[in-house]
Amino acid sequence: MNKKKFLWLFVLCCALPLLAAKLVLEFGWFNRGVSSQGEWQQNEVFLLAATAEKAHWRIGVMPSAECTQLCLAALHTVQQLYVGLGRKQVQVQPVFISAEPAATAFSAFTQQPAIAGAPQSLQDKILLIDQQGLVLLSYPMPVVEADMASTARAIRQDLLKLLNYDRTSV
Image 1 (cartoon, rainbow, N blue to C red):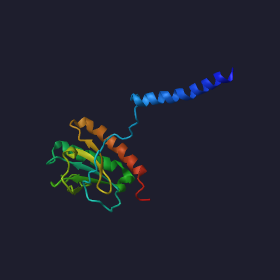
Image 2: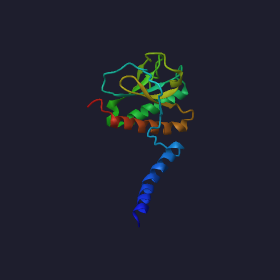
Image 3: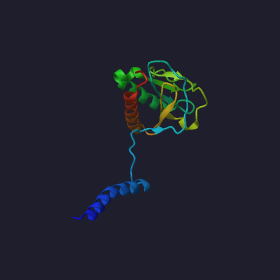
Image 4: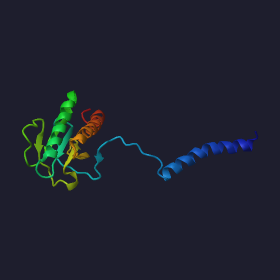
């Protein structure tokens, strides 16, 4: 094989993968990996006051007005999720975000009003909130009771990732 032919084959072997990668990115054929199940907030929304407690994460249930049957099902699901965290419960605080009191059956929840007018897009949602009061992820309250288990799994998966990568106590 002569030198010129070898050089062309070498350039072709180097350039072809780069060209293929550029085409894949340009035409959107690449599916970017999604590691969270909830919906990330596009804007910064500080919904609760900052806390200095040991619980670095808060799971908030925010009804639109008064707590309906859908809200009660979400409260029950979040309470079960909280109990299922086991030893990691100390890092999480369930919060009912409303001026109206929650049902007495949900003793794990602390009630806190929103510090500012909550956006309409966050109402009737289950929220993951950090220690500073910033809403990070939101999950819709499922209309069907059967969907509540999949929502709880999604919240648990995202919450455990956040707990594992949390370095605020270090």
